[in-house]
Image (cartoon, rainbow, N blue to C red; front, side):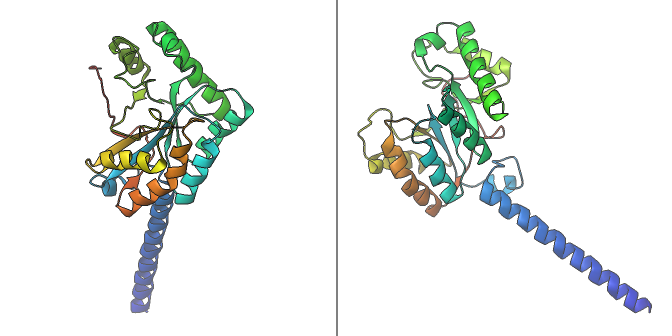
Length: 256
């Protein structure tokens, strides 16, 4: 009788361990599919030494945002959208879809008017707070990730350091880039050329934040996105959204 009880207990414990492991495997698969954890979740140890790429899109939403989201969904990857303020119903639906589909909704500026934004730290703060509050109103999400219009190395701001200090005081995290397509420099560049530009930068470093644009004029970015993702996956890159755990890349920084 004692042996039967012992055997039953051992079998129960074995089955419990098996069930726990299956649950963990299921969770891992769910996180791999969604990639919503970035470096902060269950995949942290696996990603620490892996090749990582963060696809980022500036200046949207545009009439191409829906197609970009469709391509990302097809490949089960997440991206980061540094958006500006647009109040059309279509734009609101795109903000909402970005959030609902697990991408990172991040701030770029409300007006994207460089002269106005960089006229003073006060004007800068007013513009950014307007965008943050608007996105919260539309999506229920208050973004803290941010990209300076033109990047932190832009020449329009003059001395960018007071603006950086303001961002730091707000507790926002700003991200520049170390790989770019050049899509906003030449709207006529082919999708093949844009991807060639990106891959040249990505292949020479372990972690890349890729700058692309979500503009009406950057249709070739959209046309090349499917091929870009396929190539990155084939070459072993993890494609991730920027989160608060993502290491920041700064062109210019100041001590906090």
